[in-house]
Length: 111
Length: 107
Image 1 (cartoon, rainbow over the protein chains, first blue to last red):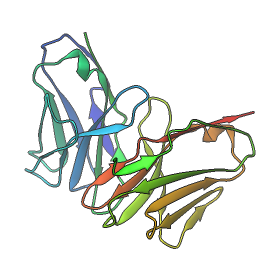
Image 2: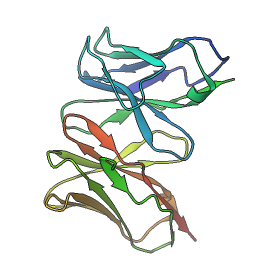
Image 3: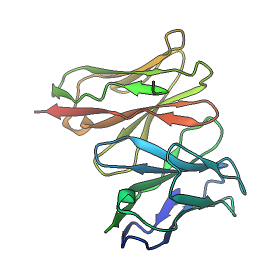
Image 4: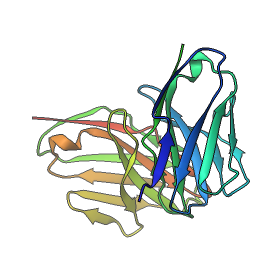
């Protein structure tokens, strides 16, 4: 049982490049989340989804877009990467009031 | 004011010490509560759920006080391996994470 899988695990981008981070979960969870975590800081919610085909903005959505075309996948896109988006990105999923399950994270550096 | 507040610490304690963390929340409609543990540069992992009656898992005890809107985590007989950041999580329609409390257990 893989749980929550994030790809890629590491990536280096140049300013202005675009990329998509993939999150896949095999637990049939309804809710999925994207967070970023900067060094020494807490998790900040970027976007989330309460079900297939739905997305909503979190605390820090600017510069990011998301899609949930399939229940098991939640994609996070950076259209034009900026150095301020250098961070560790975590995806999580859950059902109802159950705890969230996290992926291993994606370490993204933007030069 | 943040929805979920934790004392960031750091808490530096010797092995064998007992240490307690508190977390306050502002949404009285919150329904579920959890403690997570996060090691440096790793993903948060569920430590334990928090129930109204209080619950224990080995050396760890979690308590919930709905009237005062706080949850607590008590760690007894601290081990070196307990060194980590502890995050409280409060869930209503969405989950809100505290920023975490850092614990360092020293020999």
